[in-house]
Image (cartoon, rainbow, N blue to C red):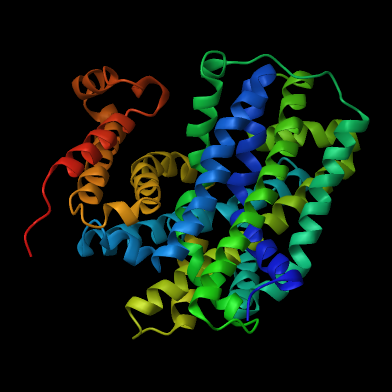
Length: 430
């Protein structure tokens, strides 16, 4: 049996719902607000890093048999360390807390007075938010029925409503490009796409998507892989369409109210101008549903993985643990979470990109034992040094001399050098 028709679409919707959360709502309009007239060039870069790479990540994991297998092509110890780091980054340490914090910022402060006890409200909100998400996540095989059938269509409808409002009333047009978007809009859009975390998430979501495909009667391993790949393509197409709508909204926002603080502020400005008070209600609904969907997907994915490597604690136990830890961290606030996520993602993303890219040439690289280790090592070491350059100014000046370093892609040439070296070195004798 193959995954087809309605079931395929529903699983694709489910994967889209798991991808599309806080960062996916904030960063496309935020990028466009800074890119202004260069928005569509920036969207090209964003589409590569936040749509193309996640889809390729889903395909790579499905074809290789899992993120552990993919990472083992570097070394078994690397596979375990990288996988745990990836799950923690998209899980309780960064991405899961961000879902609650971002949705809170859009769903509560706009509707309470300036003197309201925001920290108390945030705590109460996080308790309810994570309790509800945990209740859904405890049945991971039911995510297609709950996310794909119900919440995803509502979310897309709300975003389309906002986009149509912009078409009917185009406001003041696009704003002016600022910063690196003036000179390197495509590259800047690509690097900014890291913040969605979707390429790393793609390496982790395969396990839950496979569970949902099997729950729909598909048992053969090959059919599960093909279903996962097709669902990834559907999710990617939906992401691209929604990103384009959000980018248009963000670009118009900068034209009407220049220099928004971030993507959330850009969206708030537009819906306020288009819909008045009801705009805040509309935006709160969009953020709440999107963030809730992703929170459920991430708790499920992290719970499934950590249960697989440490079954002494049940899946339910892991899910509860991650929900509680995420609730605590979410009360630190959005700005603090984003400030921590940037350097972490700057280290993990290059290694993930190298792994995904090499996986598509594995047929020819299987005998080249050093390609994966050296490619990932060189990318990882440079990214780690780049993340720490603020602590050591001389190091920062040295790294700045690397080609592409000024646009955030200094790791590319070191990774390429590692791959070339790996191709030249002879395979170890067995």
